Length: 405
Image (cartoon, rainbow, N blue to C red; front, side):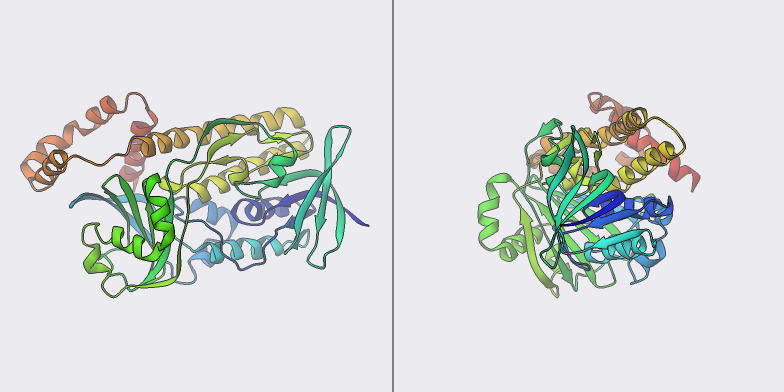
């Protein structure tokens, strides 16, 4: 049996794994990056990158934008037939995953000390005296290989095999709450400026992410009881519901679905112990939540940077356990506010009553009422979100950033 030795083996070469490989490649670590897929290839994932500074730090921002992606500098939220729109402090991008992941993999492979094995499956982890010492893999040629490593990192997604094999403990778990469907459409009538659009209608969440010119990603989070009917004819059910959103029946008149509408009955919500003796977890393998807030890829990047920082500190002589405990603490401090916000948002979203919709429509159509209301909105938000202060905190941070632009 062939045997190799690396500093780090990363299982999973998409956003989390490939970004970490880039960072560790820059630290001169000898890295093996494996994935069961080949690249370019798609994965069941929507994609709204609201923290483009990660792409810049990874050295791939220009490449990601290079195929003409529109910069999304505004956000519009619809409630029934009315909407509120505003600028964002930072522009977002919506690259398709086959495009984004391939660029990340290509960047990682520019380092001669990073080796990519595509079409390669993880069979098991090698454990000696309670410590993970490497992995057993099955290659494209159907060869079985033992690969030894100082550290094995699971970046292999929500159903991570690495996490199962090392028996990583989960906490703050919540079963899937809402099914999600999405598809790519050409020919949607655009708004005057590229804008992220969110539709809150009949207790569902719709989203529209402009991609390249004339291409958009449309998605729906639906009620759990609707999943079976949607699954029978996803395109018909999806378009029927989507065209109920304000203005979308007209805007979709000349639209054409590219590929299929795809979906899942829901995404599990959890955090996992992200490290142990000889192993670590990042990305959805370590932390996963409902996609309604569109933060999954951003969170994957954030975890990669945190882990890379910890490993770099160890190279400078810092203690392994101390650094990994700090990595765990920093990860939870960074991720838990958005985790709580997401679950609060998705659990409490219900259809608005006809009375509430009528009042909201009347308010949006009355500038005098809005002028009276606007100065009081911060205190009102504080009051209604007292049980989840992260909501007001996130608005305050964004407002401060907007004030500096």
